[in-house]
Length: 204
Image (cartoon, rainbow, N blue to C red):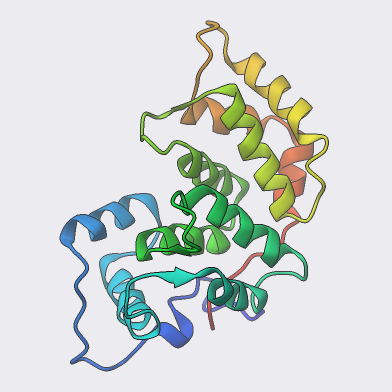
């Protein structure tokens, strides 16, 4: 897919030019997304205007998001990615996610480096924002990264445990985000896996 000036996509078909279109995104929502994604305020508002046109009720269904990601992700990866998104975000099981959750997922498709992917994955599982995860979450994160790159997660559990116990030197059963990224970055097989993936530039 052609790169857009060496930068990530900015909304593609959802990037509307209708200046009269209004958005109801709160400043709190915008600040949250600015902190947790690489989009700036203008880009977030552009995405939201289009999101509201396609999803007036503020919810994006699984079929719709699968259709979108099928156009930009390698064959077979889109279904896995969307399944992971909904498993993590769709806590009430209603088959839809909201705008903030969609933007968190979209930011992942634009992540270029292994460190960015690792930090994104950590934030996905650190739902309470504590900055720490436990071993079961570590296993889930590594498994997710494996599956998203089109690789079986069979060996991910053992690899996750090895990284986790090497990092949890004080034995308190938790690992911080920086420790997680550092530990994973020292695992050559995992980094090679993340480096080999196709970089996605957004909906263009």
